[in-house]
Length: 600
Image (tube, rainbow, N blue to C red; front, top):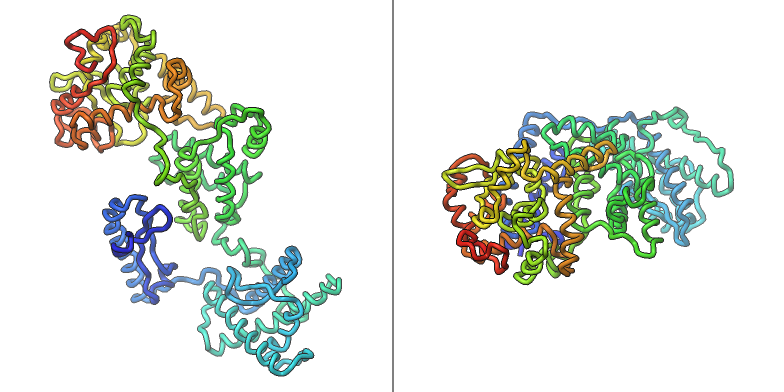
């Protein structure tokens, strides 16, 4: 269990590093505890927790240094006593309006710390009794109740006003210290203001909406940037808090200069989809965790490729239109929702929070529960029967006639490359290293760790790969799959013109045709088996052949390495070549009797 390791806690399916902030430092740090996600694996969490604690300690050391030097945090929003009075008055009237908007049989209004604004509903009859307690000796009408009830209410109301005075101190609107003369004066001032607010509420009960405050301190206009502080407006930390996500995103991109263009494009699409859901660009301070949960639920009903399938319709309109179809289009997968749209929006909110635009990230930990612990994997390798069906297709009957589709499938099986990696293979990158023919994986990849070299299996050579390379070079081609690459570039150009995401263009074209047509023709109906399953087949087959995990990871790009050298992280080309040649699949092609076709 997570509790057996110090500083690790588990919330749901995820582990977190946690360190409690000492009380003297909490004002400096702004938090009562420091927490950092460590992932869903306990082993991974145990590896990462020590580094996280070191980072936490550095934050605490910096806070201690500031505390020692006397460099205390400045007031978040310093207000004069007059402005505090106006803020309190405005909040009281705002909550009275809220009470009238949400009338319940037991509607209540009171001043406590049980809600974010320090308010809680009490019944209107009991609310009137608070006049006596709020008076603090001032001339006020005495309610017709017993002396014990009045005493209890007076004690209660004093306690409540103490809470309100403390709240303005905690907001850092004032630097007065509790239990000082200035602090007591503030509490008395708030008591008088509350009497005015209750008087307005009683006037409204009688239908009079013209009442004006009689206290001189409440007769001045209060700056718009101060009132009101309650509700979501308490999340306004600066002018940027009022910007919509679409205006914050360019600022983030200007700072994160090394972000890939495809990632930036996806983030722009993610923001567009989110604002379509909201109906309009909405200031980020108004976005709550509830909003993000509602958005997650909407994504679970969103048809995939809805812009193409429902041209001119927004995300909510596409959802409704899809529901009305006799056979609705497939909806977004959980992997796409979690790994793309929620992740992108969450990263923008996190950047805004890190830069002081928001007090927190409302999208943090908002994800679709995939139920991985008891569910099935989204992708599985092909079985021997599956491979026999695929390579038994008539298109694989004559190696001389192999075109891009057949070579793409064969290379996927014998290299474990992703579709997007295969599409970007260049003729120049297919060369000899230490006497062995290798593929150089480059271009626009998933991550830098995907750049690698993969030895060419002898079966590919026997099928005529080198003859194909030579033929393409003579015709002046640059890529091993020129038609595939050109089509992907066309998709990206058209998508960019429309402002859509283009990251997966290289992985479409042939993989998509394989999934839609060839698998259907050979009657492989398991939706978990797609073009990407060749990658799973490759890794699984290497493991069954006794290839170490280290070599397996290097070959598939799960290990950080770079191409172009005879040795990659102490794993030689010779060692990788031997591992590749251990692959054996129980399928037959026209060259099955050739000695060089060791893989079949």
